[in-house]
Structures are given as C-alpha cells and as structure tokens.
Image (cartoon, rainbow over all chains, first blue to last red):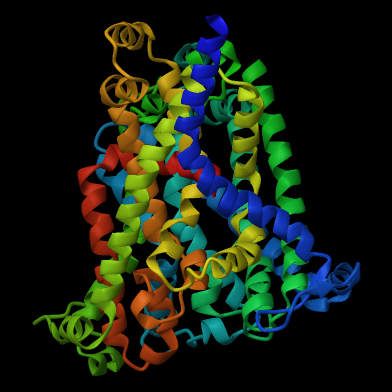
Length: 292
Length: 302
C-alpha cells in the first residue's frame, strides 16, 4: 500500500517536472555536452565537423586576438567595476540621508538599468557623435577641441565603459541602499552618543558591516562585466584597431565571421572556466555570510 | 543577522516577497539640515544625469535631421516634428519588430510561469528519488554563461530546422532554471493542510496545483512574469544569432542590425530608440515595486 502510494507520487512528480525538463535537456544539457565535443572538432557552418584532437586548444593559446580580447574584457571590467560600485555606494548613502522624498530620485536612477543595453548603446552613439553629439557640443561650448570618441584607440573602450557605468549606477545604488537600511540602528545611535563623527561611523561601522555585501557586489559585477557583448556590438564592433574586441565578441565572430566552430567552442570553454572560478568564490562568500 | 535568512541555512535570495524592499526606514542618526540639502543637490544632479540622455534622444527624434547639424544647437524641438515617427512606422519593418517582440516575450512569459511553477511545486512538496541531487544540478547550471552554449545551441536549433522562426526565439529561453528556484522557495513555505484537505475531498493532483497552490503563489508568479518579460524584452545575443531576416528581428536586434543602413538617417533611428523604451516605461510606472525586486533577482542570473 505504502509502496503503491510512493510509486504513484513518483509518477505525479514526473508529470509535473516533464514540461520543464524537456526544454532544460534539449536547450541546455545537450548544448553543454555538444560544446565539450566541439572543442575537439574542426569545421564550420558549411564545412562538415571532423575530429581535430587538441589543435583547437593549441590555436586558442597561440592566437594573439584571444589574449587581446581577454585583456580588453579585463580592462573594461577594471574601469567599470570600481567606478560604478563606489559611485553606487555613495549615492546609496546620500539617498539614505535624504530619507523621505527620495522616491522620484530612485525611479530616475533606476531607469537606465531597465533600458535594453543595445538601446542604451544606440543612445550613447548619438551622444558621442563627432558632429552633433551632446559631448562634443559641450566641449565646443567651453572652448575645448572636439573628439572622435569611438575612433580614438585610447577613448573607445573607456567610452563603452562609461555607458555601462551610466546604466548600472542606479542598480548598485539601490542594491547598497537595501543593505544599508538593514544595518542595526542601535550601533549608530551608540556611536553617535560616544561622539563618533560621520566619517568614523562610516569607517568603523558601515564598511565592516557591509564587507560581505561589497564583496558579493564585486564578484557579481565581475561575472557580469566580463561577458560584455551587446554594447560593443552596436557601438564599435571591436574597433578601432581591435581595442574593443572582447571575449564574447570573439566567440560570436568565430562562428559568424570566421566560420571556426571548434575554435569558438574552445574559447567558450575558457570563458566558462573563468566564470566558474569566480562563481565558486562568490558562493564561498555567501556561505560565510550565512554562517555569520 | 537575526533575519529569517539564517533559519534552515537558506540563502538570503529566498522568500521573493521579502525582496520587495521597503525604503521607509529613517536613518539612525539624523543629519543636519545643511548636509541633507547638500546630499539632495548631489543626488539630484546624478539622477538628472541618468535621465538626460533619454531626454536628449527624445528631443533628437522630434527634430528634422538637418537641424541636428545646426550650431548653436537647438535643444528643445519647438515646434515638434513628427516626420521621423511617421517614416519609422510606415516605411520600415519597425512595427513588425514590435509585434515580434511582444509575441515572443509574452509567449515565453506565459509558458515559463506555468512550467516553472509546476516543477517548483514538485521540488517543494513531492517525494521522489534523487530529488535533492536533481535540484542542485538544475540550479548549478545557472553558473554557465550563456555565451558558452551559444555555438552548440545554434547547431541544436538549426538541427531542428527552427532557425529564423518564432520557435527559435521562444523555446531556448524556457530552459533557464532561475524560475524553478524562485517558485520552489515560494511554495515550500506554504502549509500543506489545505492541499491534504483537498486530496481527501478527492481533488486530483493537478487540481490541487491549479486550485490551491496557484492562487496562493500569485505574488510570486507576478514577480517571475515581470522578470521574465523584462529579460526577454532586453535580450539580444540569442535573438541576434537565431534569426537572420528583417521580418523575424526583435526591436533590439532590428535596430542594431539596421545601424549601418540607417545611420544616414538619424531621425528615424532616434525615433526607434524612443519607441523601444515606451513599453518598458509604462510597465515600470505600473509595477515599480515588482520591477526593482525582479531585476535584483535577475542579476543573479546575468
């Protein structure tokens, strides 16, 4: 009897899981297995796939563009992350200080986060236009020489990074604000009574209490920003002179421009490895938080 | 931290209801009026900087293209010129892209809410072999960046002869397991009394799910639906790869791939960017609370 009940429940569970499982297996598990196979294959969209041994790995590690795209992705993340997190943190603290009446500001700050990255990139294209873009009009108004923002090898990557900073600052501001509000008030009141100034309270109470939230934000932002693609695709498509080629951009191009499936799959695997390591770091941080 | 997070060692991301952040708490130490005023001004400037580019593109879209090159620039388009919108709507495939985007995002959202809540229910309330292993396995796949499976997924969909169809856009996103996680957390907290009472009354398992569980988790379903719709509306890389004709493009991929063609015509282009933002703005204003909570959870995936 009990056994029949168990079997029946298993069948019911199977029924409830199957609709999701079909898509999960077909569009996630199968591709993952396939990417592993493809790292040992060569071929393209029109060419047949054939066994290639370890030559893909050799090619990936000997390709200067792989190193350049890794370097560009890291440089991009290194520009975006410190600026966007510090700015987000400062805005969060200011919002907390304002307290009432900050609802309109929160909505304004959050709005760019909602825009599709591609649309944000298109808007940015208008702002940086050499002829009528708002940036150059401003420079002209104060008497400085106009710039060809995206045609300059020193400026192109920072401009793409600037887009992301503008887009994400509100997101991080609200993320930090949510954490700030949850901090125990008693500590601040006690510190205030003991005569600790605002700066001291920040250094000795807020920052230590927020350590894990900040670490979490750093890892999350790193994972996200290392995968930059959309804005590069619409704004520069890797140029000028390869200064905005990034890892995901190169994976995309491997398939659709260079027709090198095995090579692209292998590069995807390198990206997977990097992201997995970062995710494990993130999970370690979360576990620490739970124990605390 | 003496929050509910610590109970049973769950991550703080559970209880989606709790993600609807309340911002009302007053600061523990009241700042002086001067420092509040200064904070106010700084925040106002940054908030304005966040919105100005949108106003700039709005103003651009309401000007004739030749006027853009005027110096000194005319910032306000008075009187407004609607020719760009007229041409966008009647001379380009843009309306088709809007339709495609709405069809795809709505279909993905509708299917996902159903299949994810069903699977979440199974993981939350039913007993079956390897349950925990399967759940951890499904959730662990969240770590895989989408770019990793981009190339093999393209081959899978090509093998099914679905490239450049609605199916290519609708089906692959259904594999994303973030909703399973959310739904399980939601359903796990519900008491089982009602379900058992219904079973004793002879209600079928599916009836229990439909008439007991679904009404109880409505807030969670709304969060999942908003999150899914937003992710679909903004998604780019997969739709770019999965379609190649102008008729099958979405708003994002359509505008991006027409960039080189339309760049000569700035007006139409800016009108397209403005129109792309209208649906999102409307939903944002209606569901502001859900949106912010939803995309905080969405960041975990991205």
